[in-house]
Image (cartoon, rainbow over all chains, first blue to last red; front, side):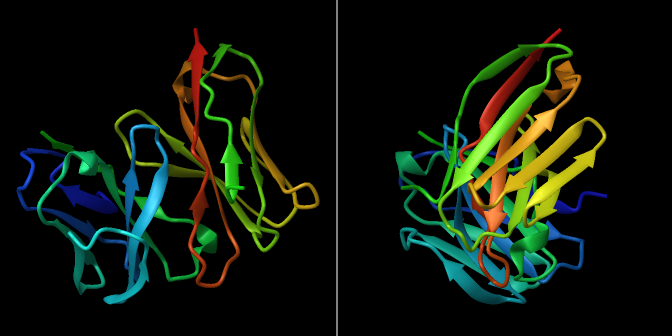
Length: 114
Length: 111
């Protein structure tokens, strides 16, 4: 059973389009995250939700909007996609908002904007 | 100064070599330290976890933390081609503070 699953795995789309990425975790964790990994492999946090409540909102364009319908799901909607949004987006979860035990990551969504 | 610095490599070693991967950090509040391994086109997976200073060993992997120098290391003994991956350090001050990642070091172990 996959602990943190993301869909889709690959997404190729044109500039200006709107797209969504979905994430689900079956670990019973309270906290979920979206990370962006650029071509140089740097992982940068975008958002974090704890039990459906937004707790981290880094400096991200407001074209990116996360939504957490319940604590097992965290989706990411991106409006008016730009070339610079091309990256791998990782969903992750942790037992609670205390980060000391690390996170469990999904396998990523590779977004290419053309 | 970035919070966490990690030499991106790439690092290429022969099979059987001892590999040393390192990170330095500036935030003295960090007390939880992790190493993640990320294979190509996969998500990062937690490899080692240590709290505060000291060593932790797990099979061929040893994690070391020196808080006085703000320096952490991951040693891989008898490296194998299957160890070829990008290794990311990560650390946290605990509480509700987020994990901060290094940029990752790409390692290739040649048979």
